[in-house]
Image (cartoon, rainbow, N blue to C red; front, side):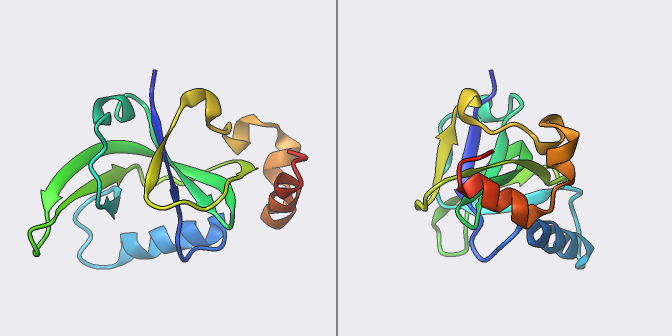
Length: 143
């Protein structure tokens, strides 16, 4: 069974903004990879489980709101000699049913049973609802 990561999406206020940010990065030269990367300080010890179908779930504006499938976990040493990790992700940002999540530092493992379902699988009415309304209903615990 796949394991997931959850991380705050710092500086991003909506899923639409995350999608636009990732699209801008994809179009900025030089684009060497057809995938997204996020650099973090800590190397996940359970990388094999993450790569067995896991995703990086993004907490945006206090809610788990989107995910990107993990495709590679790459340790490296930066220019200052500090060990870091590149989390390589599929470029598709998938909206999930919003769920409140309080702030934390770094990343955490997220068990499959605790991961919110994809919005597209939650029903047509929910998927077509404006993001702001969906976020507010999620914050109220109604979704």
